[in-house]
Image (cartoon, rainbow, N blue to C red; front, side, top):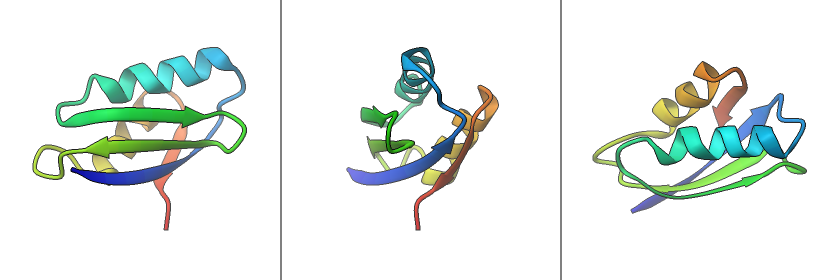
Length: 71
């Protein structure tokens, strides 16, 4: 297992948090997701053999937010 943090722009409410959480949890290889609205981040535990931080960021982008892996 590996952990990554995504910086996410555009989340404004609990509904946004739920949308991001659900999208990430559906991805193969994702074990755990914690989205923090106030910080604008998602912390994700995932299997690096099945997905990557860039793929996870693209999933979030696809549902209407801007995401990029934290440096």
